[in-house]
Length: 80
Image (tube, rainbow, N blue to C red; front, top):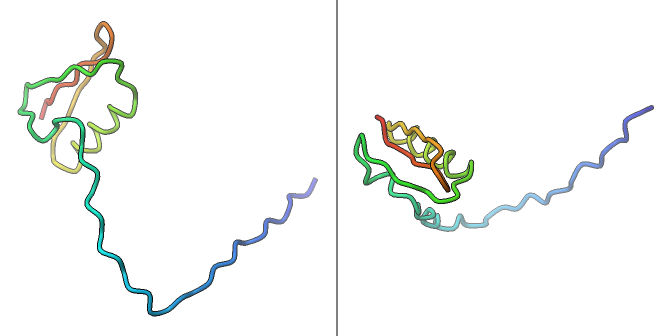
């Protein structure tokens, strides 16, 4: 069985289009920046995206976070 050949998308190259100003980044809804080592927050019904957010923030700001499951959510600590 042969693989189907895919059509390449076509793009138009344009010149002279000015670059727009960058829009400000999305504000973080979690208080990672305010947390000191040993501080924690409880996130009700936390999902994997909350943990990814903490990890990403930590990597770009030389911080580290740990989390544990609690009753109806997760507790996230700043550990470094």
